[in-house]
Length: 247
Image (cartoon, one colour):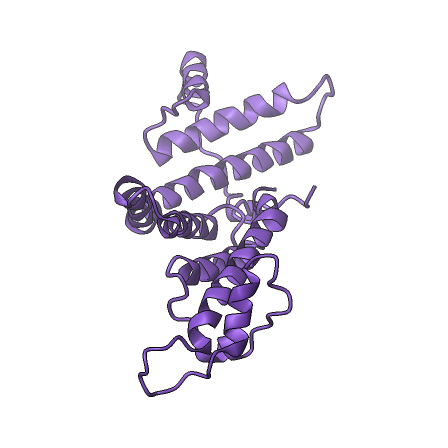
């Protein structure tokens, strides 16, 4: 199994300010507050209420996890602040993420839904367009997740970026593949993914010409081979790397 990704967004030193004063709350109010945050869906209405909950929860959690050990005041204070910092990191990250999602992620999700709802159901290119839209959603999501750094990098963004780049060409059936890419293409390792007749046609075809004679040239056949090579690379990345995205 791959090494778990570090939750970069939960930097404790960003949230280690003093706990809120809850001395005005009765024991019943504290219990009710504790229950409301721990239910699904969450029932806290404001940052102020959340900060009160953090104080109550950190006290409860320290006692709850003591396992019979009588902690010193210094140990209890450390554990409370550690708990508070972690919970604050989650709370404020989710708030920021929710605001960002509405403006930036939701349009990508809408595009994905548009592909799923309205693309024809009979062509392989539409399936790749759907996969490309989904990967763009994933790319955006991870760049603002708890495992992303301040630059939006999250350790495996390289593989998602490569897949998106490949899919842009694949779903267009070779659109925007350059002549230079075709000229540098290796055809010795393609016999398992394209017919030998296509390779022969590519090898025997004339070089691209500015004159329009209507006959398929090397670029025409090479484009078809290149797309298949891209497909194979895309599926290899999915096979060997996709599970790492979730570890």
